[in-house]
Length: 348
Image: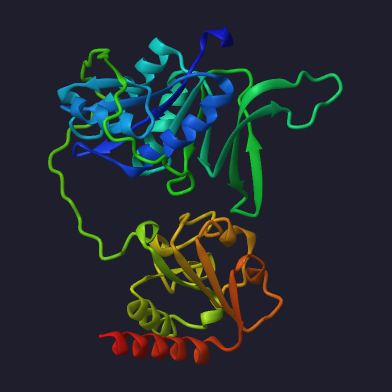
């Protein structure tokens, strides 16, 4: 493999039902950042059926070029045709870096494609940078420059690992939704659009879709919430979450939780914030009964305003909080809810 042949930063622009997922815009924002020191353009790979019209939207969020693979076999996501499409694009255009969202689709597609193009993949990354590898120069070992440094939680979130792929290309990673920031939209921006179709011949790996059933979830998407009232083990019981729900209802927010709450079976995994949960950036984040372990903080430290309520004045959560209240949450939270309701009633 000649590494010099591989140039450019590519992202897989996930779309479902001809609607581009937000993760694609987040990846474009990060791709532009990575492309600067490499002095290379950013390309979005758009795969689907009758999706060419979506290329302009990718341009508005930073894509310099859009490669469109459009075919009836790609109408719904299926591993085999989508993997064939993306692997074919990689083999044809030889990108140096390929980023895929760590969504349900991306976690299936990314590893499949990396195996086909004979490279490695770092899964569920929370940070990406361009730098030297090894991170610290070692005698007798070549330190390679301009490598993609891929950081992810390891061992159940108890440590952080930085991984590189210095000897193979492309350098691939799946990236956790919510951790990268999309660029401001540039209305009317245009990108070079290339239509590429490697051809599709159905084989015994092509799944036949009999019926698509769209389930409606009652669980909210905490990554879109502007205000989150998050509870930890210190809340005490699943029944006690009622006081957090009352506060969330009064202030117009949603309830979320820490890993300990999910592990205890008090709340579903969809509401978990942290390295092994979701990364959130609300305008206001209430951390109630949450000690502030690094695994949780990593998922919410970018919140605009953090308010912590905990009876332990030495809890690490106070180190990242903008405002902290030391005391019994069973007294403080209901009182806070009362005050908010009273203030709203005055303005009504």
